Image 1 (spheres, helix red, strand yellow):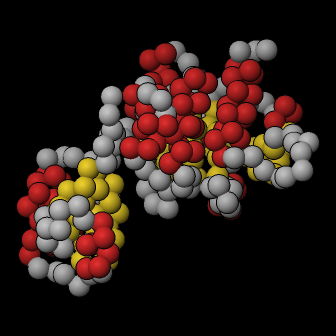
Image 2 (tube, one colour):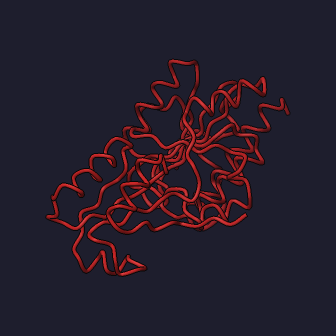
Length: 247
């Protein structure tokens, strides 16, 4: 199955894409252009929380594939996003306690694709990513997932911290990966669990970490102090698997 990042160019085409319900990750608009058609497009974009970037004509020309963008270019997702409720329903349908992976600002599409693949193999019921400052479901993500994107729902939310709080109200516990935590083998990671993995460079943000119930560290014996985000996800996810299996 092929995944294409669709660049939609021209005012009529972009407006029709929004009104038809197509998932649009980003909208690029010529800075300072506020005529009627452009206002209609940005209004539709805001309804769906699409990220709007106001850029120069030079930047639009650089992004454009047709040279006929008319001041607007929309980037549609290579795959549709799920809702958080879909992820919880996935767990319920399988008769299992929810196991959700939350990614706090993963920017590398290869990391996200690999994490989706690992999540599927580890039996996670879904993945949650933020709408801003993170990679979305690009073609590279889809390809790197090796087909797992077809089976593991990915939800995009406005506020990771708020989502964690809402899921806590539903009985979930959250563990985040951090260098200064408790060794993962010493934590109880059974039951309804959310695993939080941070940005490749900065790790889990301070506010998100403060809202987690546990902080897990992966024992390391090497000469460098961290693992790739997708590898760290795999190690922690399979410790959760081990504990869920009662091994």
